[in-house]
Image (cartoon, rainbow, N blue to C red; front, top):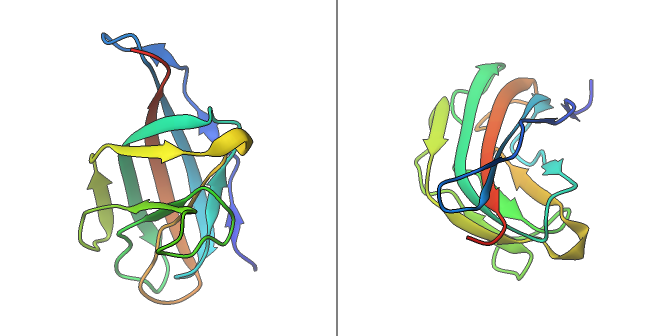
Length: 135
């Protein structure tokens, strides 16, 4: 089977104490390989990713991450489309809570790669927490 991303589930956007909106977005990747790329559309043009959590749940791989993020499909590193790379070392479960500013432009789509270390039959559960809006 080819790579697939489940439907994106969005939690209710709630205001934080600072007045910004916080929302949890989750999905599952199946048949994931090292270069497989997920996307989350319908986001505001400017968001902060405040948490990236991913767990390798099945497949030939033993580790995932650090995740790479971009604002265009098939983005490459060291270009303006590359937003950043999470700061944690590769592991079977990644919980990176480093705040990362994401400028998504008018398309409002965040792209990313979980970067599994081996195989193309991997399943990965992903949860991302974003904040947006004025404080």
